[in-house]
Every structure is written in C-alpha cells, then in structure tokens.
Length: 384
Ligand code: ATP
Ligand code: MG
Image (cartoon, rainbow, N blue to C red; front, side, top):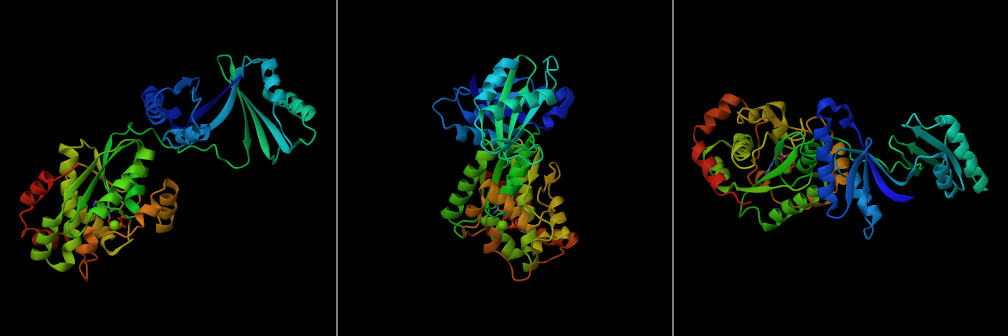
C-alpha cells in the first residue's frame, strides 16, 4: 500500500479527438509547477502524483488544486484491486463518527457489485470501530473505494468540508496567448486569472507615467505578477512609458475626452505589442460595464475601434464589484491591489469626463495628435 495524490480533470473529458492535447498540457503544467523529482502520470482517467517524500504533502496538494484543468483531488491509498487487499486497507481506517462507504466500480470485471461491496466494507468499519455509525444521508465522513480498470484501487476518506475541489477550467496554454492590461487595481488581476482559467497563456502590459507614478507603483505591479504566476504559470511583463502621450493629450485635447483617448492609446499600443512582441491572440482588460464613468457601453465601445487585428476580451464585463472582490481575495491579489498607488488615469483624470463619448468627436480630437509617432516611441521605450 502506498499513498499518492490523485487529480481528476473535468471538461477535458468532453474534448473528443483533442483530449490528448488537453491532457498532455495539463500533465506538463503540473510537472512544471511541482518541480523535478515529483512524478506526474496519467493512469486510467486519473492523474497520479507520487514520489514527493521530503516535501510537505499539503503544500503539494494545494499546488495541484490550484492548477487550472484540475477538477478535484484527494490523497489516497493505492492498492491492488482485489477484495482482500481492499478489506485489509478498510480495516485500518479509524472512524468514530457517522459514516458511509461509497464504491465506484469503474472496472466492471470486479466480481462484487458496488452496493453490495459498500455494505461489506461498512461491516468491516463497524466491526473495528465501536463509535462508528452508518448514516447514508448525512455522514460526517465518507469512505471511498474507487476500483479502477488496470488492477488498482484507491481508498480515501472525505470529510464534509469539500476541500477536494480543484481550480477547474482548462489547462493554461490550450487556448492561445492573451496580453492583459494590468493596472494595479482590483479588477485586471482577476481578469487575468479568469482568462488563464479558460486556457489562455497570459502576459502583462502596464502603462507607467513617471515621474507622476513612481517605483512603488511598479513594485506593486511586479508583486501582482508574482502572485498571479502562482495561478497562471510564467508570464512576461511589458512596461510602457506613457507620460508623453498623457501630456500631449492633456495639452491638445478637451478635458472631457482625456480618459477615452488615453484608453484608446493603451489599446493601440497593446495591439502592437501583442502582434510584434508577445505574439498574443487577444487583448484582455479588467473593464466592467457601468462600474465607473469611463466604463459606459459607449466608453468601452470607443476602445474597440482602436484594435483592428486582435479581439479585446473583458472577462469581468457583467460581474458585480462585490463578486470581483471575492475572487480577488480568493486568488490572493486583493490586499496588494488595495495598497494605495498612483495610476496614469488618477494622475491625469479630468474634472468632468465624458460619460458617453461620441466616437466622431473623439476622432476629431485625435487629429490634433501624431498618433503613429506617439505609439511608435512608446513601444520603443518599453522595458521588460
Ligand atoms: P482595475 O481595478 O483593473 O484598475 P478599474 O476598475 O480601476 O480597473 P479603470 O481604471 O477604468 O478600471 O481601468 C479599466 C481597465 O483598463 C483596467 O482593468 C485595465 O485593464 C486597464 N488599465 C487602466 N489603467 C492601466 C494601466 N496604467 N496599465 C495597464 N492597464 C490599465
Ligand atoms: Mg484602475
């Protein structure tokens, strides 16, 4: 008998002919996250993680759970799938509360049907534990026997708090690449995580306006990147100098259109970086409908026209702020996001931004600017 961690995958089951591609990616991501020496192998619709002696088992388990594509996990005893071996394993389990036994007989060649075998295992628990009582409706613990095809069975105990749940979604890397506009606020880190959850490999672009924004603002972005990498794997950060553009807009355009025009520049630059440097398939923002004055449908739409070759995806578009905050807390970015920092949009924010920018007026204003030169120079000044 030996202990190992098993991981189950969810949606990958639905992928038909592409299943191998999705599965291989998940195995690769797990191996990368867990590091050298730890074994990650596919066995009969389960992933087995073993050979982690000397590591903290709970830490390994948490890393497995946090990997997108993993639906659920358990620490199990793995044994031969014979009646005697399973009974021997069940006899060692200590139970002093209500319980039930759950048998999953994936291997239909196993000679005893599931309900009957569950009752037999339950009998062994009752014989060996004087305080154990059967409760099939509402047990304190469930003893699971998973009889796999290929001669092995997993035995594990679940308590009532459902801590076996994995991150869900799809393995990072199966859906292409995304360039995420990362601002340092609460929203964009959550948007990045949701994008990765659907299988996108994530890179970041941040617009900095020194000396108005300082090193601390950049440190904060790097810190967020680090936290996010715990969920999405390795990423790349492009830092774009945005001071000259902001000043030009402030000098030459009407106040009410400043935010709209700044956002449009961000999108133009992101598209260029996405096409030329990060080889991205899409741009992601943390925009959310009607959250702030610049995020009316007209404001959001005015950004769309600036990206002509890459789609802009907005994973948070319909979420309530409270839902976004809950997600930010869960992924661990919230406390960093709420640290005070200056963003270009806070520095250059006008008194009365246009709530419903008229696109023809915006374009009229932009004629006062040398768009191509400003974009080109910003891209040239990028630091990675
Ligand atoms: P966040 O919490 O992500 O900052 P927000 O609610 O503050 O979002 P805005 O400030 O209006 O909203 O920004 C909308 C989106 O524009 C952000 O989610 C982000 O994707 C992008 N963005 C804004 N400022 C920057 C910046 N300085 N660098 C990169 N992206 C930015
Ligand atoms: Mg912001």
